Image (tube, rainbow, N blue to C red; front, side, top):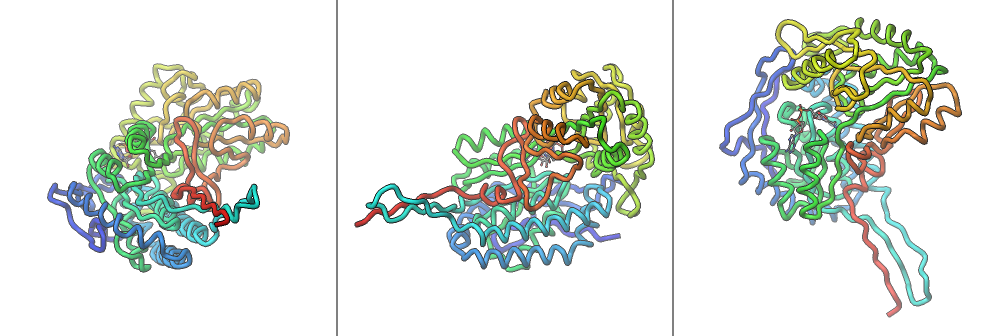
Length: 481
Ligand code: NAD
């Protein structure tokens, strides 16, 4: 069994202990046993982190792009070298299967590589002048300033890597507050940057009371950019704080992804992809497919096959068994949320055809759950479940499917399966989401933007947009003297 590391905060050049307000227990969600403790930051320590990020900014932002690129690339290489240990710690902290933790760490290294490269590619542009009197119109992207980054526990290395790499590549400095439940994974990522030669103060990492930390950091004069991934409710609060100081804000919030499955879709391939993707990370994924809208002609067959596949998944403690398909939910609150959701469904039309139960014994395990025919007004069909629960609803026309798909305020990802070219064109154009994938589920790659619309937030991470989000546009125009 991998040893759980001692968790410390990074402020300036120092790895430091709690600022006097005690520490927080970290649990293995599969056993409910305490595996370690994380320090809690004080307001004085937050001020020290802000000062460090502020002092480092003028130097880091003027560091040649090629130097920033070299440090980030080295950090990505170190992450690759340390993958096995980091993945084991990630599973201990939040329960995901080992193969998924390894894949996430490898993906994080690729993200850092892409954003590091972007530092070298973004040279600005020259705009043709309108009169003989003008010599030049130069448009550049300048780093916006110190950034504060808030990440959740469901992808404890991918999400911090995306934000840190975007910020640092663009020339910003950063303070990261990872989730309280997964502090060591984030620390191990930060160590890769430090060991790669990142100058002190460019990256700081703190843990503790989320509300106190976010309010203190976002309202601080020095902060110029806020990036948050988490729930829509918290995103709205942090967005309001950022808006008061006219600070740039990127929010990657919840989703409730629809999947439109047409009669012409390759049935076996589609149902296999749905079952494999729905229960990845125990469904705790913002882009998890959740509302399955299935053409009536194949509805019964789809429900039966999806349920049969979900029952074959091996559920267990991934920290001791690498063959587990689905681990526990990340914390007790998530398990309670699933139990409450299923209880609400029992009184609300839907038929629970599979799962719907917590497992006996220690650990926050919840069985893969399939609900057939939930009411469109039910809690499940209107609020993000963020767990291993799928609802399946029949539709008669493709227009009706799109209407149901687009009926919520969320708009993160949407999916469709069809072999009709006309249908795929129509669905790609009419599904309202920041990301639409047809005949597959892979919406997150280093090269492409990741983000939503409506209650799923705004702004994009990864891709070129993930770099540009940490910059502001500057025009320099020169006339003849
Ligand atoms: P939660 O809202 O208590 O916590 C989610 C995350 O938000 C945690 O990392 C927490 O540290 C952070 N957070 C909470 N309040 C904050 C504040 N005031 N300032 C800064 N950060 C704050 O809920 P939970 O039960 O842990 O997670 C479930 C909910 O969170 C779901 O509804 C889901 O939508 C959302 N969530 C979304 C994502 C995502 O990738 N979009 C990831 C994790 C959780």
